[in-house]
Amino acid sequence: MKAKKITAALLTAALSAGLFSACSSGEAAADAAKTNTKENPTVNTYTPNYDNVKPLGRAYLNDDDTLWLAFSGSGAEFTFNGKKAVVTIAGDDNAEKANNEDNQARIAIYVNGERVIDDMVDKAEETYTVFESDTAADCDVKIVKLSETAMSTCAIKSIEVDSETGIKPAPAKTHSIEFIGDSITCGYGVDDEDRDHHFSTKTEDVTKAYAYKTAEALDADYSMVSISGYGIISGYSGDGKKVPVQTIPQYYTKVGFSYGTYGGKAPAAANWDFSRYQPEAVVINLGTNDDSYTLTDEEKQMEYCNAYVDLIKKVRENNPDAKIFCTLGIMGDRLFDYVQLAAYNYTQETGDDNIATMKFDVQLAEDGWAADWHPTDATHTKASEKLAAEIKEVMGW
Image 1 (cartoon, rainbow, N blue to C red):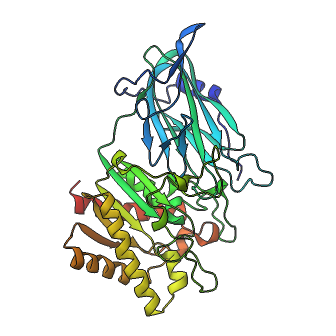
Image 2 (spheres, rainbow, N blue to C red; image 1 turned 120 degrees about the vertical axis):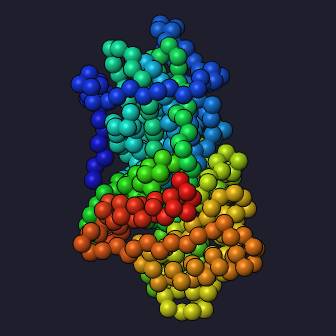
Image 3 (tube, rainbow, N blue to C red; image 1 turned 135 degrees about the vertical axis):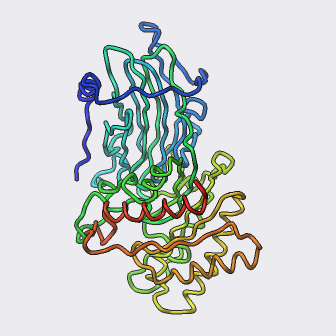
């Protein structure tokens, strides 16, 4: 699949046709990161920070004053009233590598809910005019990294708007959730519904995965910690041998993990500040890759169970008030009994019963298969509906 760019001219035409409705602005943004164009005093360029945009996921304010995006779904959202918006994205050291098209970061930019940019980050820097109009309009601009952290990262370098009032962070949503998972949470292959095709960041789209869909259904802000092929005690094993280097718990407290670097820095070298985002609920969906190692070996399955307890403890340490949902099943549910046992053992050991379990329905042939037998958009939709209903009931939302 070739990701496409939608030009500002098309967006302007759509606006003129009344396809986009106006949206409300948030609180006033700080002016510290603003530079002014003398020829037009209403045109200002902003370096994104936590005061002038709403960070999405584990968007990280880097040393070079860019907003670094590693994990799937990370990004930023802001509002403004004006005539034009321009966003500059910086690529990591993988962006311009030869023969690396399947590993570049994929991004989307939305204006008032419409995806106006869908592109692969294949340059050190790329500037997008995302909105342009002869008359001022209220706009909500959302930048989302569609692909996962492992293969590549990118950063929001600057935001320029023609606006008398500048940019403001988009308002917080009603609720907040964190998702911890693997390729299923990343939206692996969802844009390539051919089970015989293989991995490419071109066909990853986290917004079509169950986690993002669940957050949208519940009007919840989200954060995602997910890497394809990773598990709790082992990554995906094609031969039954343990792959301990591919485990999520070692990166849970980090900004991400990547084979590439941005500005000479790896996301695993940056610690995440949990005070920035304290979700009401945390959803763990890990075990699909572990199962390729544990198979039917009860000793290995108990190893998974015990390590799962340790992961719950780590999640609780960093999210003291969150309800923790332990889930499994979309691509197989053989380890679900051990998920339930882990939740039970954790409560017995700690006395903490602010925890729940839920088994997803296993994907069906009638809903098709995406790349490497991963869930299709239809399967993700069914999974999100079940999870959203469970969270609503348990949380009383």
